[in-house]
Image (spheres, rainbow, N blue to C red):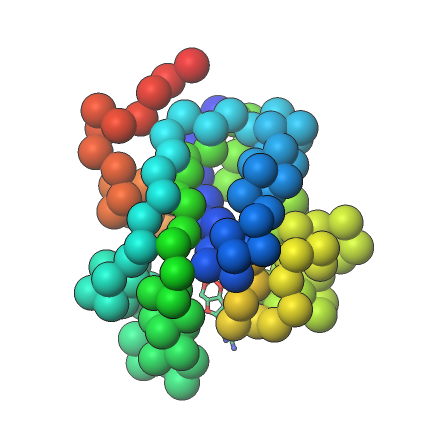
Length: 140
Ligand code: CMP
């Protein structure tokens, strides 16, 4: 089915000037960018986004990292977009990510792992709405 998923290009990948290379991978895989913006997240915005991890030991570092520089948030649309995006990203820990995946190619650590992608239809719906109003999404 056609799905939408939220993608974030994280501060490490933005700092590496890899925004275009990462978006090119989505487009080459048939995913379409239907919304996009660059943001420097506040602690409150990053903490709210990752609220489900609030009790995890890495939460503070995660919020610190995600607010350390600008990010690019996008809505990707396409056939099985959620799973396709996760395949393109590779495992959360870049050391375990399959060769040729975004995290294998652009990330070194589990904290600074280049990209985020929604992990289920329910989280995609929540995450897209967390960053975009309906009128900021451009069906195409
Ligand atoms: P992301 O998909 O953005 O979701 C939560 C992030 O927490 C994850 O990517 C990692 O960058 C970061 N993180 C740090 N340590 C861990 C861990 N032990 N397990 C899962 N995620 C972690």
